Length: 282
Image (cartoon, rainbow, N blue to C red; front, side, top):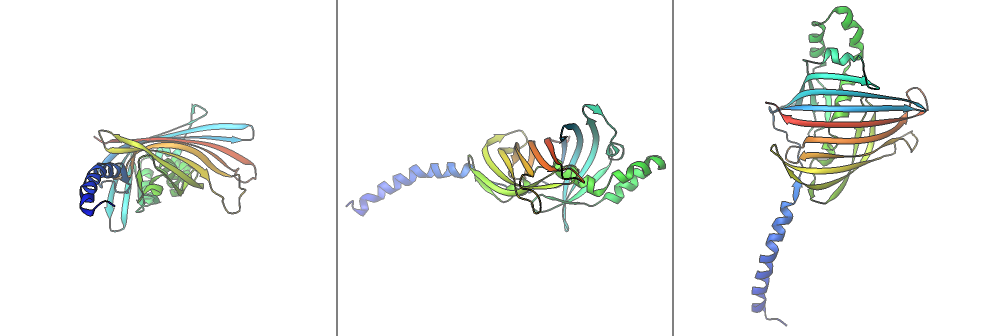
């Protein structure tokens, strides 16, 4: 048996060796919090490509928006305001008319945001639409305003948002660690699909704007009540995320969604691709 006094130097030496390892392990762990700085402005660009495939008929629609995003905190919670700079749409590569492009540029859209970063509702729709009414002929406004509703704008914002925010908020992960969480994906038409996220913290990536981390993720469909088991979203993506704020400075994800054609039982395949990026507004 080793005398107790002889063990003391051994234990001290072991502790000295293990201390750097423990510090290194802690340094490789990050905790994700939704806490974007209030009042800071970011130029956000999102490109949402939606390919619709019904039997042998296929169409590809591309919507691209450029906005400046700002967040503020109030007693009612967080609000995020998007100042719309531009909206463009193409159908099978050809420019197409989009009523949003005639109403939104130059307008502000303010959404209420939950504590986990999820977009809850559009709060200033009536104010925005009243300002739009004053800037175009009454006949034209009457023609396109039914196509611009709070539901449409909320659905488009959710479809372009970072789907990982709610799944990551409050989690602590180490580099190389994989975690799973339930979440949802949205189509620009407002349809929501429950999914299971599998997320891997790949590495730290320091940039001029943040001490970011690279998150790779995949999505798998979850069973929807009253719908066939083969319907749902399957895909993968990657995001450059600031864990201290949960801002996604770069995001790319691709999804293949099997859903029912509106008004029919025909299965429709939707290919959804989202590319989004942030940059400080100067």
